[in-house]
Amino acid sequence: MSKKEKAIKTNAMRILDKNKISYKVKYYDCQEFIDGVHIADMLSQPYEISFKTLVLKGKSGEHYVFVLPVDKEIDMKKAAKAVGEKSVEMVHVKDIKSLTGYIRGGCTSIGMKKQFPTVFDQSVTLHSEVIISGGALGIQIFISPADLVKVTNGKVEDIIFN
Picture 1 (spheres, rainbow, N blue to C red):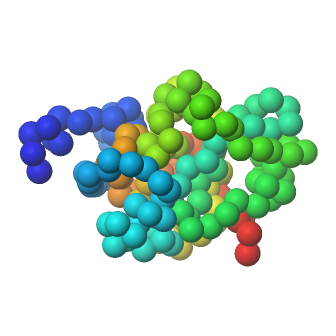
Picture 2 (picture 1 turned 60 degrees about the vertical axis):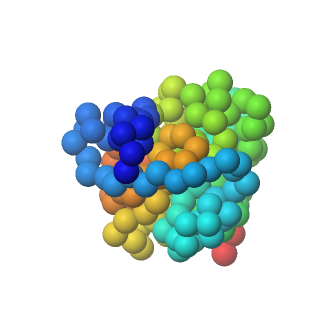
Picture 3 (picture 1 turned 30 degrees about the vertical axis):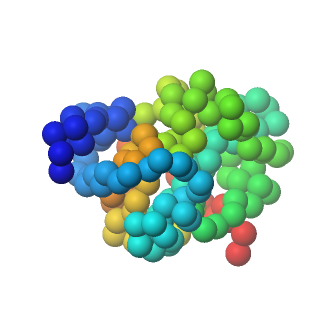
């Protein structure tokens, strides 16, 4: 690992350190972000442990964070029910940075500008370790699901199409 890589600390990593949560970091070259499946393929990582972070807005105007495997699609009805909304919709990509502090492809449920209610797909509990974005393009965090749910004050629900 180069000195530059060691020096990169994202907000997500600082929060994990502050909470004394164990995690590993992987740095990789990312010139262009397409989607999580592309990154998992590029790094030969299993989809079922590679999780993406989506930001949605409820009918009430509140924002919510949903974390699910990169190859799965969120079920909007299940997602809305999980947060007590009549309906939810995706936040526009152009609004992600101003809302969360993170860019598309670097968005993680840890350390957003505001801690939004966070819901993890129930499949997260099937693994001893999962991979999430590290808070910037080219950085991944490997973390235990229990620690991830705890540090985000999240909850676990069925939120994907079966």
